[in-house]
Length: 177
Image (cartoon, rainbow, N blue to C red):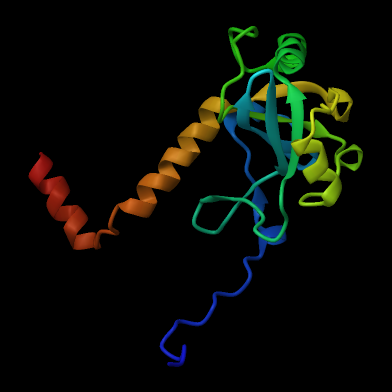
Protein backbone atom coordinates (compact mmCIF):
# COMPACT_ATOMS: atom_id res chain seq x y z
CA UNK A 1 0.00 0.00 0.00
CA UNK A 2 1.33 3.42 -0.90
CA UNK A 3 0.69 6.75 0.75
CA UNK A 4 -0.23 8.48 -2.54
CA UNK A 5 -3.75 9.17 -1.28
CA UNK A 6 -2.49 11.22 1.67
CA UNK A 7 -2.65 15.00 1.30
CA UNK A 8 0.65 16.79 0.97
CA UNK A 9 2.12 18.22 4.17
CA UNK A 10 1.28 21.89 4.54
CA UNK A 11 4.03 24.46 4.12
CA UNK A 12 5.84 25.55 7.27
CA UNK A 13 3.94 28.47 8.81
CA UNK A 14 5.61 31.88 8.41
CA UNK A 15 5.83 32.37 12.19
CA UNK A 16 8.35 35.23 12.10
CA UNK A 17 6.22 37.27 9.67
CA UNK A 18 3.11 37.16 11.85
CA UNK A 19 2.53 39.98 14.34
CA UNK A 20 2.95 39.36 18.06
CA UNK A 21 -0.11 38.52 20.13
CA UNK A 22 -0.89 41.63 22.13
CA UNK A 23 -3.64 41.08 24.73
CA UNK A 24 -5.25 44.24 26.18
CA UNK A 25 -3.65 43.48 29.57
CA UNK A 26 -0.26 44.27 28.00
CA UNK A 27 -1.22 47.67 26.55
CA UNK A 28 1.96 49.72 26.14
CA UNK A 29 4.29 46.76 26.86
CA UNK A 30 6.84 45.58 24.26
CA UNK A 31 5.76 41.94 24.02
CA UNK A 32 8.63 41.04 21.67
CA UNK A 33 10.92 40.85 24.72
CA UNK A 34 8.57 38.65 26.76
CA UNK A 35 8.38 34.90 27.19
CA UNK A 36 5.12 32.98 27.51
CA UNK A 37 5.20 30.96 30.74
CA UNK A 38 2.62 28.29 31.58
CA UNK A 39 2.26 26.27 34.76
CA UNK A 40 2.37 22.86 33.10
CA UNK A 41 2.35 20.52 36.09
CA UNK A 42 2.08 20.72 39.86
CA UNK A 43 3.23 17.92 42.11
CA UNK A 44 3.56 19.63 45.45
CA UNK A 45 6.03 20.89 46.58
CA UNK A 46 7.19 21.55 43.01
CA UNK A 47 5.76 22.65 39.69
CA UNK A 48 6.97 22.60 36.11
CA UNK A 49 6.86 25.78 34.05
CA UNK A 50 6.89 25.65 30.24
CA UNK A 51 8.72 28.70 28.90
CA UNK A 52 8.32 29.55 25.22
CA UNK A 53 8.87 32.34 22.78
CA UNK A 54 6.07 34.90 22.69
CA UNK A 55 3.16 33.73 20.48
CA UNK A 56 2.10 35.37 17.24
CA UNK A 57 -1.22 35.95 15.48
CA UNK A 58 -1.69 34.40 12.04
CA UNK A 59 -3.57 35.88 9.10
CA UNK A 60 -6.87 34.47 10.39
CA UNK A 61 -6.47 36.06 13.83
CA UNK A 62 -5.50 32.84 15.62
CA UNK A 63 -2.87 32.87 18.37
CA UNK A 64 -0.08 30.56 17.26
CA UNK A 65 3.07 29.16 18.86
CA UNK A 66 6.24 28.01 17.17
CA UNK A 67 5.97 24.38 16.21
CA UNK A 68 9.65 23.92 15.43
CA UNK A 69 10.97 24.78 18.91
CA UNK A 70 10.28 22.90 22.13
CA UNK A 71 9.58 24.87 25.32
CA UNK A 72 12.08 25.06 28.15
CA UNK A 73 10.72 22.98 31.04
CA UNK A 74 11.73 24.29 34.44
CA UNK A 75 11.03 22.66 37.82
CA UNK A 76 10.61 25.22 40.59
CA UNK A 77 9.36 25.28 44.16
CA UNK A 78 5.64 26.11 44.37
CA UNK A 79 6.31 28.02 47.58
CA UNK A 80 9.14 30.05 46.01
CA UNK A 81 7.07 30.78 42.89
CA UNK A 82 4.06 31.85 44.99
CA UNK A 83 6.28 34.14 47.05
CA UNK A 84 7.92 35.58 43.91
CA UNK A 85 4.56 36.19 42.25
CA UNK A 86 3.14 37.86 45.37
CA UNK A 87 5.97 40.36 45.08
CA UNK A 88 6.18 40.85 41.29
CA UNK A 89 2.85 39.80 39.71
CA UNK A 90 0.64 42.39 38.00
CA UNK A 91 -2.76 42.07 36.34
CA UNK A 92 -4.53 40.23 39.15
CA UNK A 93 -6.37 41.49 42.22
CA UNK A 94 -5.38 38.72 44.62
CA UNK A 95 -1.59 38.64 44.35
CA UNK A 96 -1.45 35.81 46.91
CA UNK A 97 -3.67 33.47 44.86
CA UNK A 98 -2.16 30.00 44.72
CA UNK A 99 -0.59 28.92 41.47
CA UNK A 100 -2.73 26.52 39.42
CA UNK A 101 -2.10 24.29 36.43
CA UNK A 102 -2.78 26.32 33.30
CA UNK A 103 -1.89 29.69 34.80
CA UNK A 104 -0.17 31.86 32.20
CA UNK A 105 2.41 34.57 32.79
CA UNK A 106 4.39 36.95 30.63
CA UNK A 107 7.80 38.13 31.71
CA UNK A 108 11.30 38.66 30.46
CA UNK A 109 13.03 35.30 30.88
CA UNK A 110 16.76 34.80 30.54
CA UNK A 111 16.48 31.42 28.85
CA UNK A 112 20.27 31.24 28.53
CA UNK A 113 20.23 30.26 32.22
CA UNK A 114 17.93 27.31 31.46
CA UNK A 115 18.90 23.94 30.01
CA UNK A 116 18.17 23.65 26.28
CA UNK A 117 14.75 22.12 25.58
CA UNK A 118 14.67 18.33 25.47
CA UNK A 119 18.31 18.10 26.45
CA UNK A 120 19.84 15.47 28.70
CA UNK A 121 20.52 18.24 31.23
CA UNK A 122 16.85 19.26 31.22
CA UNK A 123 15.68 15.65 31.62
CA UNK A 124 18.09 15.24 34.54
CA UNK A 125 16.87 18.48 36.16
CA UNK A 126 13.21 17.48 35.83
CA UNK A 127 13.81 13.92 36.96
CA UNK A 128 15.92 14.86 39.95
CA UNK A 129 15.03 16.69 43.09
CA UNK A 130 17.10 19.79 42.24
CA UNK A 131 15.00 22.89 41.71
CA UNK A 132 15.81 25.82 39.45
CA UNK A 133 15.95 29.13 41.34
CA UNK A 134 13.91 31.94 39.79
CA UNK A 135 16.98 34.05 38.94
CA UNK A 136 16.19 33.62 35.22
CA UNK A 137 12.87 35.46 35.63
CA UNK A 138 12.82 39.28 35.56
CA UNK A 139 10.01 41.33 37.14
CA UNK A 140 7.37 42.42 36.48
CA UNK A 141 5.44 39.21 35.85
CA UNK A 142 2.16 39.84 34.04
CA UNK A 143 -0.65 37.44 34.90
CA UNK A 144 -2.37 36.56 31.62
CA UNK A 145 -4.35 33.57 32.85
CA UNK A 146 -7.78 35.04 31.99
CA UNK A 147 -7.01 36.27 28.45
CA UNK A 148 -4.97 33.13 27.65
CA UNK A 149 -7.84 30.87 28.74
CA UNK A 150 -10.24 32.92 26.62
CA UNK A 151 -8.00 32.47 23.55
CA UNK A 152 -7.75 28.74 24.29
CA UNK A 153 -11.55 28.45 24.46
CA UNK A 154 -11.92 30.26 21.15
CA UNK A 155 -9.38 27.91 19.57
CA UNK A 156 -11.21 24.87 20.91
CA UNK A 157 -14.63 26.09 19.77
CA UNK A 158 -13.33 26.91 16.31
CA UNK A 159 -11.84 23.43 16.03
CA UNK A 160 -15.10 21.65 16.87
CA UNK A 161 -17.63 24.02 15.28
CA UNK A 162 -18.50 23.65 11.61
CA UNK A 163 -17.82 26.57 9.30
CA UNK A 164 -21.09 28.14 8.14
CA UNK A 165 -21.71 29.42 4.65
CA UNK A 166 -22.85 33.07 4.39
CA UNK A 167 -26.41 32.04 3.49
CA UNK A 168 -26.56 29.78 6.57
CA UNK A 169 -25.48 32.68 8.78
CA UNK A 170 -28.17 34.93 7.26
CA UNK A 171 -30.82 32.25 7.79
CA UNK A 172 -29.81 31.75 11.43
CA UNK A 173 -29.74 35.50 12.13
CA UNK A 174 -33.15 35.93 10.50
CA UNK A 175 -34.55 33.00 12.50
CA UNK A 176 -33.21 34.47 15.77
CA UNK A 177 -35.07 37.78 15.36
